[in-house]
Image 1 (cartoon, rainbow, N blue to C red):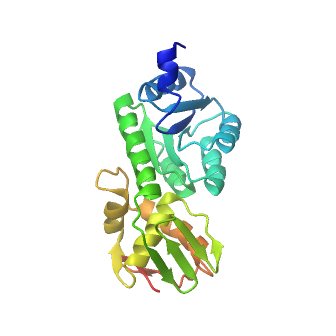
Image 2: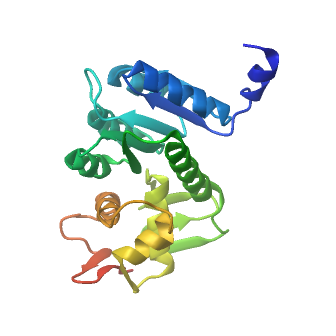
Length: 239
């Protein structure tokens, strides 16, 4: 690698891990992502991908569903338990079930094969903007509801004095509810306000993230007392 190219990647904007078992596609993704200025690591199976993610803590993981050994859905599930990296799933055409399951397991977005590289790069940029915004653009403020506290400036949340391990999207969702206690939001409103108008997805994403958040802040997520479901409308935070 010549010095000019090497210098280009010494201080990357973001780090991305690509886990894909099709060699040609893996190399094409790596080339195009590096061309955009990202630091890129790769793996061609799920076990190696999970190991690299745990060691390098990437900002975003591009993860194929169909992988040898540990498949992409298993990697997504395991990774989401311990990482707030954005996860972009690659699914084969028509695999609706995989897309739904992927979102339920913690994926932030998905792209269906075959896809244009331009589309994928746009999705990557959108996900990383979302992550950066969640991490750095919160106002200097402190929100509290009983034993539940959110420090927007430090980007931390705690329950009974114990820090909560929230993903960027879960943190945004909790902060939004705390700022608007007692107000009901439709799923479409939450999707537009937190995911943005350019998000390509449906309201099931909101339901999935609500369920995850309830598991972390409710005494019993099956009978929530904080995030209430308003039948036929959406959700309201009671605090």
